[in-house]
Image (cartoon, rainbow, N blue to C red; front, top):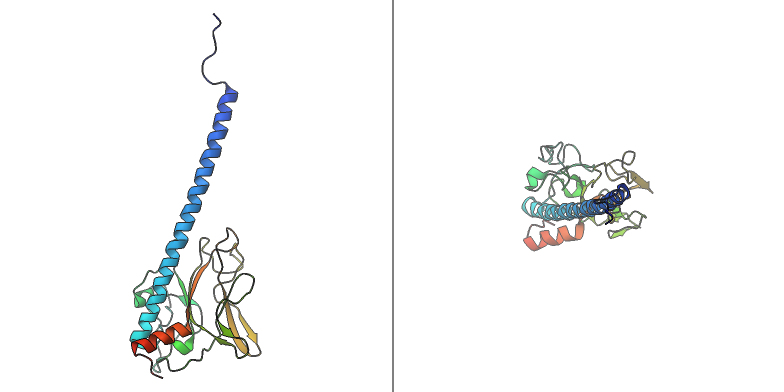
Length: 229
């Protein structure tokens, strides 16, 4: 009888290892994508809660909170005239302690917050916004309701996460989109500060943003009896 060699040959073992590598690589990629999606969804839920907390704060105090000066999460000091002493009309940290919400996104990085000064100083008594905050998609299409003729914006506050890569500035951000300290585009002496929101695309866009519409805020204030105008 002819003895047949037992076990795998080197070629057979190499083929098995290649197949196993492909399978493991596919599993790891799939797991990574699921993890990314879960973190995106968790961050979005936290942002939605922050949006509701901002509305609740406005109902209680008649205005929106100032941004926080640092990671302690307490809104910035106000002047004697009740105006945000610092970080008024600029992008800074979310006052998460003041609002009683999560400090950070699902990647553990602090949320950023931008508020229109007309809605954070004193009591809200006007429909007019100061900064003309705008949100567009990556192609520049405006996503919020606004009046381009008078530069009126329907946005009174913006909260966002810098996403998976965690980089807020255009020079260092792999997706190349500037979403913090947004460049002020002076159009006919009417400032507009643009922020970008779009779907997640790997290595192209990963920021996650929500904005508080002026119309929603006013309606909530009216419904609660907090509107002073």
